Image (cartoon, rainbow, N blue to C red; front, side):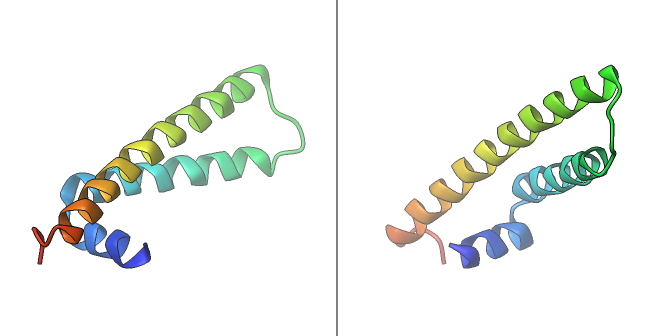
Amino acid sequence: MLASRDHLLATHEEFRKLATEHTKYEQRLSSLTHKRYLTDDEKVEEVRLKKLKLRLRDQMEFIERQYREHVSKGQVA
């Protein structure tokens, strides 16, 4: 539900912080994937970033799910 994500980005500080971090990790991952070869340290960093991104996405989805549940119960305007 895109509207809930937009609303949360505009109103929910923790959600916005998680989204910003997620974007930062995505940008770094993108720069790594554009390299022809990765050093061993970069390979480790790539795996670490993927795990961090997944954790952040899970946290963001949890907040979205809570928001949708509250909206469906009429608890959030």
